[in-house]
Image (cartoon, rainbow, N blue to C red; front, side, top):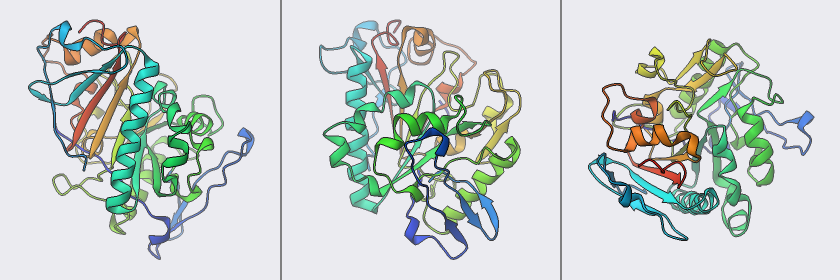
Length: 328
């Protein structure tokens, strides 16, 4: 695997004189979806506002090593950076994922006074549902959370394909997170404009020392990035075979002809993804078992899938249900 990283920090009160974040008004009505905007020197921007233990993952693990227990995960370690946890059901996966995120939230809030979280779309948001239930809904310090998106579709925010809408409906509208702490990608712009806009916003947050920076890579360093995986092995909007997976300089890029509709998307690059302090890769369902096997099993291939290029500075944890791990 290649090595990259992510982590972001935010505090709306500490914004510099050149960076103004306007409040998001969370409304229960979809037609009044909150849009978080930022303005830097007159330019409108949307910027949806250590757990350092390294364990390793075997690429030659037998199926027995992935055997799950009745109510907890089977953990596998080996030669490559990462840890794999396999659960009997997606329900058990969601329970463990909630505790993982809550523990990281407590750690970073105590250490730095904020907690930067990057989310993706798809089934990942569904797996966050336990966070909006007791005990976490009442125990997490949501006022210190800052939420970002690893990728977005260039569609209106009330469109069914919007990653923002998915996160809002299922998660953000259910937690008392400050409106100014949600950084949405400005999908009112063109794909190229939105990618440049998001990167510009993040660069100002880094310059203002609101967002941390990786000393190793010079890219923003998020506290945790929560990623899903497609059945073709893509993560974020980085698809197999696209030259964009090898981008090494830019923070945000755009896609005009995505293999998966809608055609236009904005996404973080691998240098940003892999500068993370922590990454959780959440994969559920038998339809992804072949790709999980290629990524984690004993198969050998010179062509790396995007998911195999995920390798953060800090800890990588795979959260698999038994169906997704069935071919390991």
